[in-house]
Image (cartoon, rainbow, N blue to C red; front, top):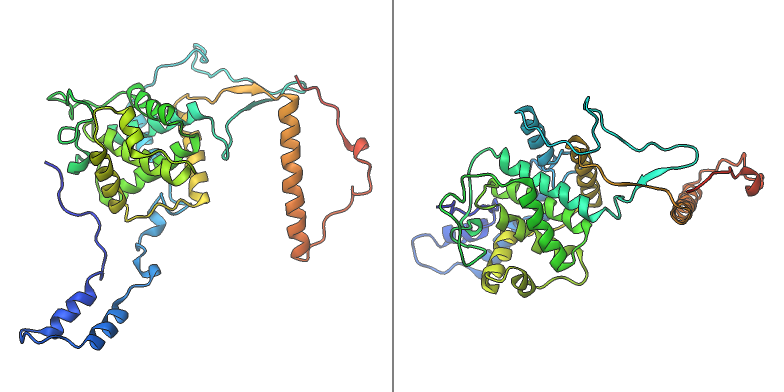
Length: 342
């Protein structure tokens, strides 16, 4: 049913073996071991030679390439998708937003280093929803097909691959796994990176019949790469009680093969996906909750800014730059402005 061809092709990976076969020819004579060794060394690829030519177009590797889900979300919106408006909207369509004033400053509790768990999972689920809804084709692999590898004993209905899941169903599935395994919001972002890396490398689509196992495989890898105390595959079998450990191991193994064992996520790529999810949330009215800036949080932010300022000053000194010192002799108390923190 699915595509049974291997998705991982390594150019020149068997060149040493082919050359040895040619040297043996049809005479049946054994090749010289020294010649085989020299030939294998000549055909050994450097790691830079194994990098794809379109690296700058891979969103999961290059920091400037736009994520796939943003493109798909814009296409779906252009096709007429209308989301249900929340209570934060006025009758004329304007959104109610809390505004900062002199006495009160509103901030959301989500940052690139500590994202909000609930809203990050909502955004990741929405990105998955757009991947399914606006897929280019129905290219699948058997390992992800729920009919061949069901997640429950009941199996799947006959039309399991015909109807796109709703956003709330995707969110419920992902949130259940994250709550049971006690995963972090950062792990959700890494999950989305691995997911798009799989779609790019394996040249497949997320369909109604494959999205759950694709997401499950990405979560397994992300939890093991990101978290120090990784969740074992047998623990996921306690969450999804009808799936076997062997099936889980095979899913993880093939997932790694299909992404060519490339599990590294640069910090620039992680930040790009975080801010792209923020953009997706704003476009779909999934606003991050804003709270008044408390005195304790203001003190923490001030302490963090002082640490960063100190590191930046040390770096300038090491590079031979002189720090601007027009206010260095001014007493700190006279420079401090009065603000009311509620």
